[in-house]
Amino acid sequence: MSEEKMSNRHLLVVDDEISICEIVSAFLGKNGYTVYQAQSGEQAIEILKEKEIDLVLSDIKMPGMTGVELLKWIKEYNSFLPVIITTGFPTLDTAIEALKLGAYDYLTKPFHLEEINEKVNRALQTRQLEEDNLLFSKLVSLHEVTKVLSSTHNLEQLNERFLDYSVKISRSNGGALFFSDSSQQLRIALTTPEPFDMTFWQLPAFITASQWAVYNGEPIIIEVGKTAIPEGMPKLPEFIQSYIVFPLKTPKRILGALNLVRAQNSISFSNVDLEIINVLASQASISIENARLYQNIRENYLKTISGFALAVEAKDKYTHGHSENVMKYTVILAQQLGLSPNDIEQIKYAGLLHDIGKIGVDEAILNKPGKLTLEEFEQIKKHPELGSRILANVPFFESLIPLIRHHHEYYNGEGYPDGLANEQIPFGARILSVADSFEAMTSNRPYRKAMSHDTAYEIIKKGKNSQFDPYIVDAFIEVMKAWKK
Image 1 (spheres, rainbow, N blue to C red):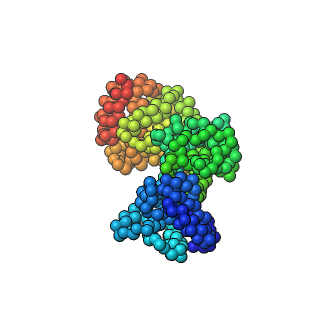
Image 2: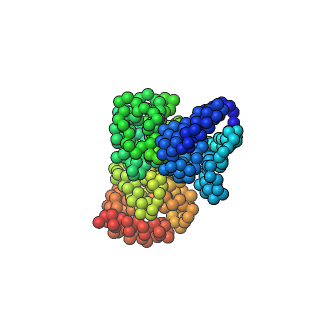
Image 3: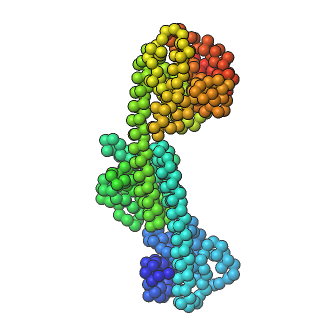
């Protein structure tokens, strides 16, 4: 270990014999360490809570709390903190017990001061190696985490992952995300479960600290008993030991704040914790901003494309509201079939946009009151392919294209445009096919009046295994009958 690192190390010598404390402390002080003294286990605990200690040298036999009891407490408080046990009454059983409990080494009195220095130096080198390994493992974890965060554009999912990773990596007891809304008011967006839930984070201390961090663009770090609470900030709850707030910043603006706490009797946040979380917060802020931009652009595209869909229906007074009804039925059916939220969202938009290709079909054909000629029907049959081409250059709707292109395929392979059959047809397109047919049959058309729901159910049943997937038909009729009650 370098002299610079050694001089920054803080040691605690614990012994009820004041003379031994002073001799050992003076010797270690001359070797470049900062040394604190305690004459009891209880006093040692108070110092450990207030100071950043790198190694403890403790007598094993003391009045009140023994060295073994102190060792147990230290290992629960901070398992990385090395402890060297000393005693003037050595026994093999005592040595074995201390080592089993996590003591780094064992010294018997009287001891040579050089022997103490050697063992202290070796223990600190071991701790440095453990800290380096911990930092390396956290950096590896951080690398994996940032890859995961940058892989999703789902804002809700991104926020949940970010908070969860922040709490786990920093070994916090609880956390919360605050974001600025459109009026620049800071609001709680997400919290951990009880007891560190929404109610907890609404306390004035956390609101004030988050506002300060966002306004100043700087983190706040409070160690109870070690750092002063900023002026004007309400006191933290008594059971909180450590509290940090990181502003969530991008190069252009501040989005909000990440809050993390550790409860009493926990170790303080280390410099490694602060550095790792600072990097994570910076990376997550960029991912959150990108996800918001993606969402905004996607919504704008959807509004534009939806406008086209409405324009199609405006060409045909009889199909007004058709796409919205199909969308409604597909969502109800998709939920009945247990699809994931993401799949339900995809099929929802596919339902809204499934007939967008009709914008390229002659209005006279769409509104013809009589039976279509073969040539006219061939024009109508082009709308699924045309719709998929309209959306082909919009990245946000890439996943909708197979559903829109194939919603007129038949389960027996006799549909269009590609003659797909059975499992070749995308599952979402099979759902869309049933919902689209039902809505068309139960709506007025230029060539006929709307059918009753029961009549439409019977026609759809007859289409099982020919036009429709039988599994989807059964699920659709079941959910629709229950929904219409």
